[in-house]
Amino acid sequence: MAKSLLALPRELRDIIYEYALTEEGGLLLKDTYPKSFRGYRPYEHWVESNRLKYVCRQLYHETKGLGLKLNDLAFRSYRQAKDFVAFLATCSAAQQQCIRKVTLCDTSCPSSGSGWMSPWDKAVAILEPYGASHPGIKFHLYIASLSITSSADHWLMRAGSLLYARHMHENHAVLPPSFRRMAWRFHADRQNPIPSHIRIFPGVRRDMAFQPVFSEPDIQRHGEAQIKLCIKEIKKWRREGV
Image 1 (cartoon, rainbow, N blue to C red):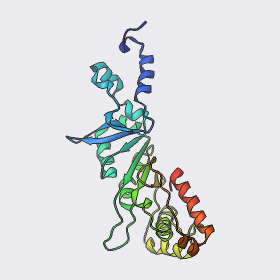
Image 2: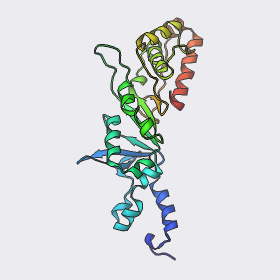
Image 3: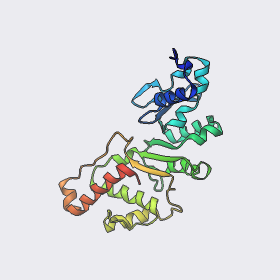
Image 4: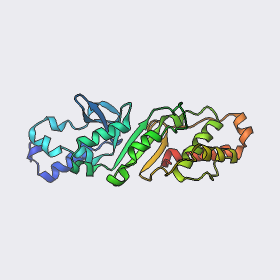
């Protein structure tokens, strides 16, 4: 009987590593000083995921990079899309090939300057090139401002903008005719749809559900059937993204 982890056959050690280093909610990456990143447990974000690497040199080499191979990735910072770019630059080509899915959140607000800018435009522009350069990576992009809904009109305007940006047309059943025209007007100069390797979700992360409450005036103005369709669509967005 083996008396220590390193006395076990390598095949058994690899099984133990996989069990120990797989995080149910994905690997949470946080930047440290100097500019580098460490992986933490998502629900204990002060606890590093791979603590085996600190035991000895052999465990360091045997578990190095397994966090990327075994887990989806998430970031915690104020500029997550840019931090993903910085993180990728620290990875070797082999490590980059291990990355499968990255969850990010954009907490910025729509631009109040000249012209219309949707709250997802900046993050999408940063992530768009990776569809060609890293086709194996899928992005789940959470947009915090999509969960701030003061009325049905507010949500329908945002929904119309997002649906147009994804599909490049305004004919969606969830939108009343007036909001379809508004979606086209806001995005008439848009050249390309949001690329397929980016899925957009309302809210700040998967475990923080977003469910707007529509008022009685909302129901009277748009009709009960339209509001029910909105709620159904929101539930779908929470599950699958747009």
